Image 1 (cartoon, one colour):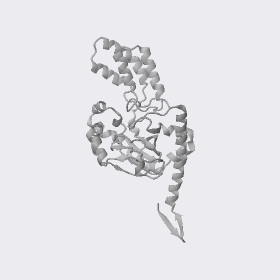
Image 2: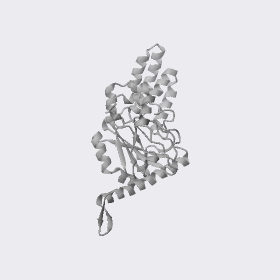
Image 3: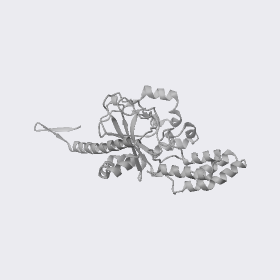
Image 4: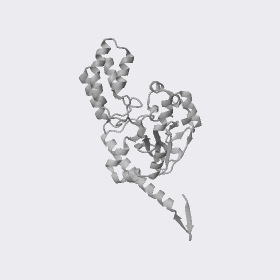
Length: 325
């Protein structure tokens, strides 16, 4: 903090006043997060984490929408931040979309395993390996990763650990799960302590992980931001649930007639949504993996099990409803 001494008194500079005003705003939004977490505890919701053990953290999925509905003025002030706009537009260009999840790491909670993030980082190894090299290069350019500190985060509290320059390693979406890369991360990572109101932004391809909270009293609270490119979405809206319902009898008939696996997979790929996000992680959390099942997984299983069309229709409809906020 910069200060100027005038007549024996210490005065805050204009920049400092802006910082103090933002920290006051962060405190207002933190109070909203705490209220949402309290409601989740009462209702019994709010489980599941991508890269940490169950119940290690308190999570608020879709915090952006929930904050807007709970406290619209605080939401507007918070998300009007010009630094967020500057960094997001510099990385992604205009018409980006912000999403956020609150992560509170409780005292004593173990840290995450090193990983990469959205998009390819949330896919299984075999699925990620099926994408060509140019997609591995493109994926990080479609998302900006960030975190706003909602409390002071000394190193002992386990702020995010980073492996510098690892975002430049092109096979990283396949490498981060390997034991030798995990060991290298543990030996070579760096940590950046943060003060309340600080923010950190980085490529989702950077190997990173939340650290272990070794304090007795710091509930390390961060608002995690994933800002998405406008080009990460398809040009047209497609009712893929209706398409999957319509082609399912054809898939069943052709499978019974001996159609090959490749043929079936091609039709499924053209019909059903193959990507599990966006998701409502409250009602469809990643408890059994890194992501909930995609509609294409549901259709694929129904073909394999030769299920009834009515059952598939019900499962797809239930999945659509789970994804709604």
